[in-house]
Length: 153
Image: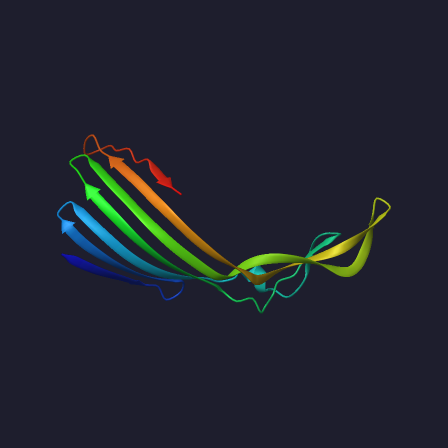
């Protein structure tokens, strides 16, 4: 039996999952997801704010959202009291937010030492790729309790 599940989020994420039921207690899943991470309000606020005499934070109204796409393949096997679940995934993000610091050209006196004033601002600079494996096992002795050790790497 094959199931196809679509999750559509208007604001931030889309996900498509295809589930193949090999046997009654055994499934394989294939998934794709796309996420959008938008900048927080203070990331886009162009008005400078002082965090100290030598540091200024200024938002960037031209910053773009971060987009990420991911695929995963999973396998689930159910036994009488044990469920094993494993998956491998790949994710790629573009336009990751990062911060730069730049000298404003101004200086202030701190303990009789002339210190430059720095401006910190967010920009879209980086991309990110992740490959990983996840594994979980769920052992249930009875219907009301269970132990779930999870490892992700």
